[in-house]
Length: 209
Ligand SMILES: C[S@@+](CC[C@H](N)C(=O)[O-])C[C@H]1O[C@@H](n2cnc3c(N)ncnc32)[C@H](O)[C@@H]1O
Image 1: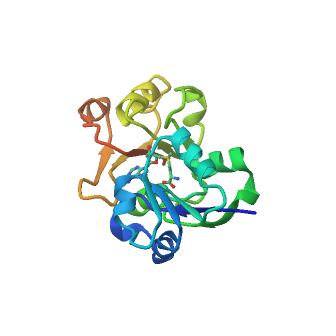
Image 2 (image 1 turned 45 degrees about the vertical axis):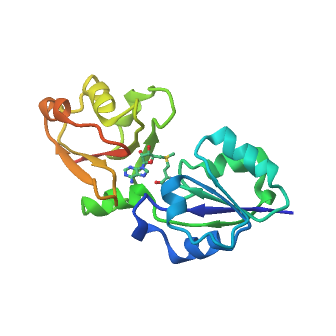
């Protein structure tokens, strides 16, 4: 019998979380999320609210509240590079009452640069080793999820060793999408890479022309 509701919280901006996600989150007995996510939800009927973003702590909380209707808020959409998969790996699909879809940061990145995200190959170095770089530029349309350590500057710096500026490509760094600090930076040279000011959450988009 399931007890978990996986709620996609969107990329961060309060107006990029769906009404359905807000409503389903406020109907849970227990709600887990980060501070910004929880700030967007009406929680006065919620029995327990946990501000938590560490993966192991979240999985422990889900175990602790087994049997109570427990909402877990995840970033962007639950269907891509998401904590949702770790929950399924640990507790199985039957533990989940429902997955509420949401707006992915990848969708927003492609909307910002006015491009389709059809046939885009998505890579993630968010908490993952920096490897497999030889494959990335073989794809015509690429989105790369970064993290603070494996940030856009580091990733584009490494891709330069694989010929990033040899072909004809459009390159963008999309930072803090949907938030007040949002920036979309067009990269055309190694000097542009050197000038990137790394700022929070980022996606790199590379399109072959
Ligand atoms: C663990 S992945 C989760 C992706 C999520 N499932 C989605 O659909 O957006 C986290 C990464 O997504 C990207 N990301 C999430 N929110 C973002 C935002 N507001 N602006 C830019 N990138 C974002 C960053 O690369 C971040 O490190």
